[in-house]
Image (cartoon, rainbow, N blue to C red; front, side):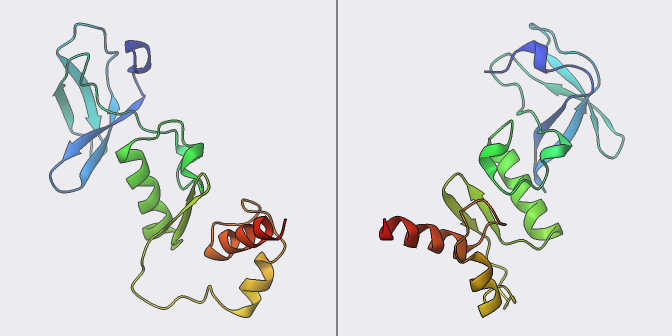
Length: 150
């Protein structure tokens, strides 16, 4: 549960948005319990007084160092906007279709052929531990094979 100590100036939050689903905003003034609004600064420079109560504070945004993390469980804040943002960064900007969530592999369908399934890739993942290389279906298959062979 978030406290007013985490809703301080320069920290960032996610607020609902009708077009983008979630929009990032920076906290412009420290939030104190009892405040009815959270003063925010949107990425386009717009100032916004966002109505809140202690039970409905917006989700906090992860630090930039975690943007594009290959395992969702490594995120400081694991909630809907954090997951969607991380997957969008990995897929749309980095063209990476696979992301781990612990031992689960999340796959985004690119709706096109990708050169990530050839023999060279199979050999690259062969004998590797899951997590040693970028997330891939071959890493999951290798881990399953190793566990089965034990």
